[in-house]
Image (cartoon, rainbow, N blue to C red):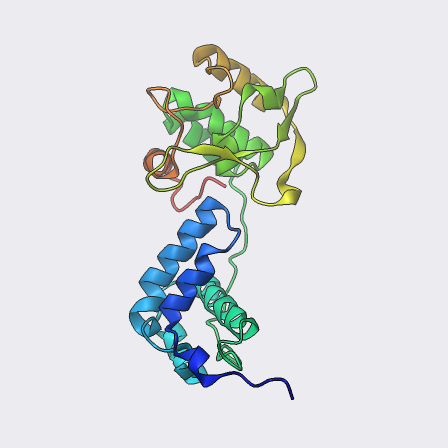
Length: 249
């Protein structure tokens, strides 16, 4: 039938094959980092040393059940495992993927409740001066955190009152943050700016003039922002404002 697969091909361990698969993927640096971390922490310790051809659907189901993570995180982790086995089938390492009829924990999406103007203003006032315009910008445009971190003067048209989103700041462990493309192709967009955002940006640029070609928002020493460092500032401000559990986006 043309579907024969040499049993010897499935003797390669899952970890050996997954590492080969990982090395040839066209992933963004941040995605590549996430995939490596997910496999190392949640997959390899359980079935990484098992031959590809010996892993059964029941073992994949047990693997999924063993993850003590949020349902959405489990869904993403499983998607990587399923993709690896799909590639193994195409490479004729195994005849059939064990990732079939696997039940995942239900992802229940919370209802989105927008913050009130007073809550946003409370966070603004609790922020250090150099980050206040970031909060107003995010509230007024819905920009992602990486897009705000990577915003440069060249993207802001103060006369037309609009921002051209064509990049974001990407941080990878062990390296300085760099400019990269937006999250998706549809993320490239032009955003109209309310007057309150224009005024906040103009005041910020006057107080903290950015270096040419560098982001408008930087750390206290002019360095490019990292999510981890800014996260501490954000959590401290939201606690002080009495608005807990709110993400930047």
